[in-house]
Image (cartoon, helix red, strand yellow):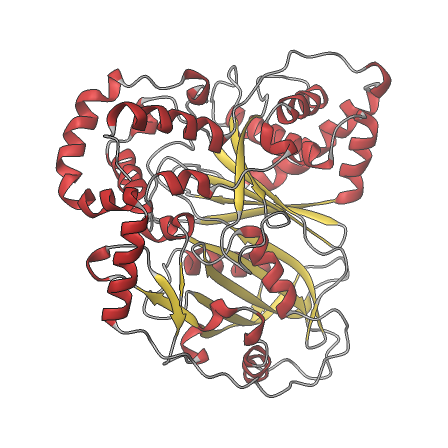
Length: 508
């Protein structure tokens, strides 16, 4: 029995019908070289033999009576792999566009809470686009809840599920697994009570439901008076920071990593991640221009950073830090913008030493954070006040060697991330086998005409290459540094100041 961290639990409490909080993936496999098509029953047997790679596949949530604390992960005594799988056949004329449309619909549906929080749809009968023409293939549409993984650990799990050789391995029998007995309600209740006594701040979460009406009134009355730290709220208004609906769309574009590395070499003292962020910034600038949006103020991105290498406390879960980064979209020169992004990034503390994001959630219980987020959404704060940031951009390094599933090569993967009110666009960049794919998860009711992003990425890359080739890395222009605060440190400092002023001292 393992209790969720405050950060992991917050993704459960933030979830609603219009904001499912799972990470998604679409994995396309080339099956043209197989002697016989991979049958769905074969895939089920293969997956059953690989369930031991991560506990999350057979663990479900155990809620605390009266919500006295965070839920626990426990073994699911009624686990059945069939409850987590689905089969779809698109027919002989299915195309990749059909896959993406199907994936968008599947990813709109929240995962069911009465079982382990994952689901895979096996899609058969479609043609993979290739220069040689259509190839027979199949796809996996994967959903993993954000409470159990982050983007980095999710990529690791998929790497463990797949194979590194084109020769299909013999499917072994599943390893013996005996679920641990489900803890009684009394044991969970007593454990939660003990935890609550150890952490006085958790006592406040008991009152969050009763205090909701009062909090709403106070927020409406005091919102204008709050001494918010101005450096944290300098992100401009954008079409992405509006109330979203349940509709989702995934738009992707792939580029060769070699082209991005050549840009890095031309610009000199920048990182490959700076170039990726610069490509995203140029694409977003062009998109806003097409939408008739003013680009005079630079967009601010929240960029997650994995701290798994320095804090391997759990095999999975969310082990993240983050920083706020000025994307310099007001700068018209895309090559100069990349240099400016680099200067902004190196001034942020997490760029040198990431700080665990659960520092913030340890200060405030996840139930209170969820209440704040719901009130933030209900009052449409982001539409009336400056947002904290405009969108998240995550860059996840993937394997640079080919992966296989029973002899079928993984040729392309697309990834999605959760959206939330006031956050209608998320960018996830994933590299695989010498290629980088920019994945835009968007709410089409907030970010219309999202299909144009595919062409805009290619146009942006062409322009950056031209500007970078003419730039001299030996005589790079000096730009004033735009200092951007860290998400954890900035918000934490502000909340700590409020708590010292408003909360009574507790005796020990």
